[in-house]
Image (cartoon, rainbow, N blue to C red; front, side):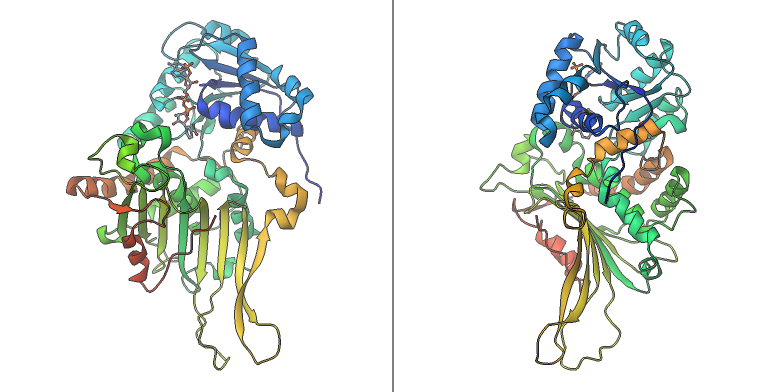
Length: 484
Ligand SMILES: NC(=O)c1ccc[n+]([C@@H]2O[C@H](COP(=O)([O-])OP(=O)(O)OC[C@H]3O[C@@H](n4cnc5c(N)ncnc54)[C@H](OP(=O)(O)O)[C@@H]3O)[C@@H](O)[C@H]2O)c1
């Protein structure tokens, strides 16, 4: 199998926050890999912009170090790195000041694709959008990329949408959710809509329930102050888990095109039932051998913020009536693992006498680690001794199926940035989607805040609080094991 790299058009990409953690850890190492692959054309340029008083040489040095640290296997390519660094420029700009904008206007070319990545705090989005126009830099063709968090509730998300809409059309705005850039997430759509096998079964006649787990082993780290005001619901469920849920549950779009896909996702969010209180379990990690408790991490001894949440969700439509979707995400869990599992119903009748075990088909879609899918099927245990049945996975781990090519699976950020340059918004969230997600999330958060609900403690390195296990057990089901 030979993979094809189709170069994108020549571009100027300005990264506001070009000296920040995200730019150094993800955006620039990702662009370096796209440069080496030939997808980023040699004439394209990247312009870092931030307040730090650096010159272009200093910025190139900073990015060389970042690529060495975060660039992966490609970092040994010194010739390639040199050529990449030559594509970098830097302008010192304060989003709230007036200095530097004229220099930026001089640098950005009007005859290539222009993209502006707002890799800064959302409070600066309005300042950047306004100044890009005031200084005549952005045009009706320019694209802007904005990062999460997109608001902390419906009202703030609406404000952000209004702020951006004052200067840019929706077709110019790319709201990043990097989960949507993952290879497996796109493969999920290929599996659903590119095969005849699954779609006929993808409904409440055949699916018993669906589980979505995003488990992290890390704690809140250095993000304590931000995280404590956010929690797992705002930080993970409202965006990443919601997007995964949409892709699993949506109706087939008429075509694989940005608005057709996003219209279908929006319908899923709008069809979500309010979640009953007893179908939500919030948790907070306790101190363990390997680290302090959540409250110590965030330096707030009275924090009621959740670092874990599990919930049972229902979608009010014809396809999914009666099918529970169980979502869970947490920090300091036993393994780093993200998985969607579609658990099909039991057979109505078995013809195999003496086989008491429960056999189920399960389609498991792994986002990390080892991106891939497997389908659990029931077969006869090999050998003599009658018809004993066992469940085995039909494994579609990309690394096995695609060999060396799988190692080259593009990181989510790289893919998404290339989509921005191509002008393809399919894998980006539309403003109304984000607002609809907050409209569903807000009353749940308001509910536990008004009640002063205290999250349940769970051991670091576990699968979350006991109550989360009970959420499934009460329904006669159980969570899939969290495996790294
Ligand atoms: N890091 C991640 O993994 C991650 C993941 C998802 C989303 N995000 C989001 O991405 C954005 C950036 O995150 P980050 O982790 O890179 O933050 P960061 O490390 O704090 O970097 C912030 C960047 O913004 C620049 N900056 C701050 N104030 C500025 C101003 N007034 N004018 C111009 N530039 C200014 C900073 O440079 P100077 O100090 O030199 O100005 C720096 O380059 C945030 O919205 C964050 O929520 C980050």
